[in-house]
Image 1 (cartoon, rainbow, N blue to C red):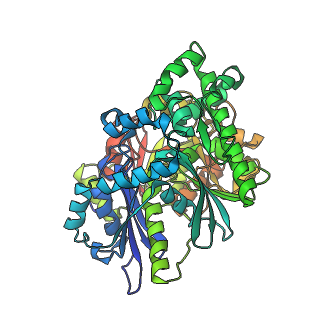
Image 2: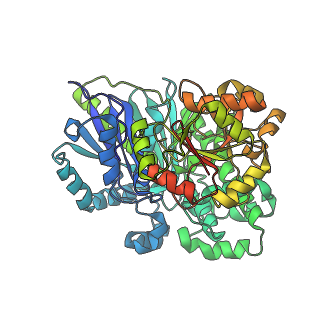
Image 3: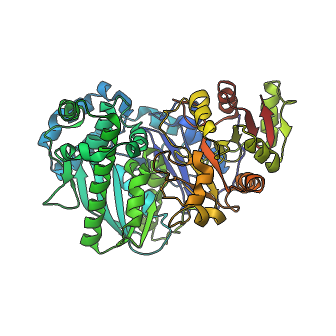
Length: 575
């Protein structure tokens, strides 16, 4: 089924850049004159979570969404010199085996970068190039953008201010690097520090602890973060300090002091963590991560004298650490790119390509601040009707008002919403969401056990009317992307099911009418019905699957779960 097309074509003089990431959580994006006009990850189209490989469907889909032709492309920008394969299958990758063996002996990032570039030139991309041939764009200019530069570009070129900025990237690893510090001024990004992959804070501490706890590395770190408030860090944290620290001689870098890398660390963890409680291990891991990140940020501000901070990279999905960065007295502004993980790198590659092209062509680039993230595909009423007819359920699908939805939620119904364009990034922001009454803790049990099969300790998020954020959040500010955590005021207990059960913190989406009128209307009507200006929001998917991207995936998820209702645009199906 083709999605609704949303823009109107390319004019003479326009600069259109196709951004591609063909590694972990692959995807594609289109940038027109510096603004994102379409972006989607492959997983939303093939229903394979964190798909790794050529994003053939996504590349073709972004042109369809934007109502543009591949021949309109000015430049193609591919993120990463070395493809980041599926981290969950690293044992099958011979390069990974070599990395584990040689990593303790390589601390020179210059040598590592040289090796990465050499390997990058040898990197085969037959599938990607074959697709470009099929689309008749193989002869278009193609550039390759280093992994952490894609993260930096995402955050810096879409920052909410014009001022000089400190740019921080932090993740497990990409192109041999795990963290960078840069300074952005005007249209230029100048990198001043890099941390090698061997010295990775995220891989060696957080991901390996995730693995030690029997969870999936590079996927379930958020579960450790969610578990952390239940434990006590003081019983374990000192032992973990012998693994990783800030380099005392190079204070903008992390330093692995264990002598081991990745899974080679497991014997150490088994020794120091044996018979320790899992919640205390999580608490210590989160606290040490926070302490080291904060020390790193403070060092970078002191070194550069720049106090507006922009951040990207998978480690900045840690909303609790983001909260502490935001609250630092020396930080005058903090911006966290919402699609912080590798899934967001197609946008970063495309933005970097756009700014390079403008510089080489002596064209003044257009800077676009980040607004909403609804970059994906949308389905028209006609398309939804055709789908419902194909399933013989058109008569069951009744048109309903936001008021009706709000009443159903207030009466205990749990309803999924499939409406408007896909969200970009890992968070459901209303268009592909499951919604429920946040006053009822019974809904937590129902969603966890009967719908999403989530772990019992994991919190849900709240979508809050923007005009009510001061009522509910301490030190409130607009937070439309679910990328930051907040402490809450007593009034927030009214939506207790959408807070962290232990520390009562919130990871909110503040919702304004202009960005998503339909989503806003449901929450507003829920407030009129109950007095609570928030609803519980969790992503529309089953455990182990990506957020739904098609009507077919949405209906299948509805039928295979205990959801009470499914809202297709304005048509509601109830069981």
